[in-house]
Image 1 (cartoon, rainbow over the protein chains, first blue to last red):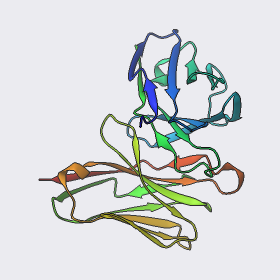
Image 2 (cartoon, each protein chain N blue to C red):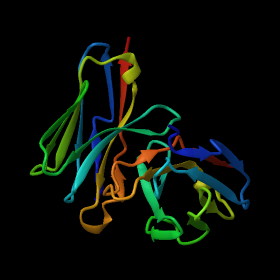
Image 3 (cartoon, each protein chain N blue to C red):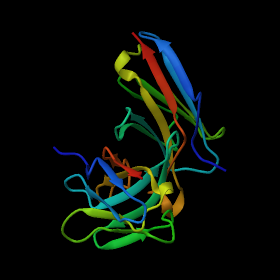
Image 4 (cartoon, helix red, strand yellow):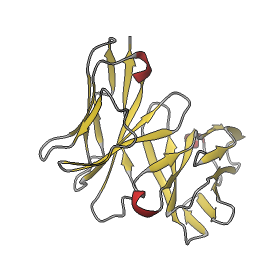
Length: 115
Length: 113
């Protein structure tokens, strides 16, 4: 009964490199959400995806950030040319179809550190 | 304006005591949820209360919702050291964006043995 799986748990990148964060939703869940948490802050919504579709990316920065949820495989959050301000914990959540999107079940997150 | 503001920011109690955390929000909601986050971990869903509900119980947890005051409270009874964590309330957007959860900064609860 695996929950939402995120990897890696910790990721260190140098400024200018690319970061790829992966999320496998719970079995049977087809809705995926990405959130970002800065230190001492609550989670902030970034993007909502269903299989092969971006439903709402209103919380994503306009540049360098992209997300996908392919037909096969995990959802990917990609950050290009990382900067120090990208350092944060990135959480993925999932919910089953037809559930009114709630509740959302969260993974343990990827902690991204930019050197 | 920010949805889901919890207070207090930090709460320290002795094992066996009750802990009460409050949450205020600003716009209309469909549901309000409470989550727990242990240090370095993800969020664990505790309880969801719908906008037409006033109170809900789950084990040692009791949640109330007052939509007229746009506030909610989470009560943990007979607290244990294992309850030490940050607690967040999350509200969803009414209408078509109910998937977009908005979190407050949380209440850090410390239960001393």
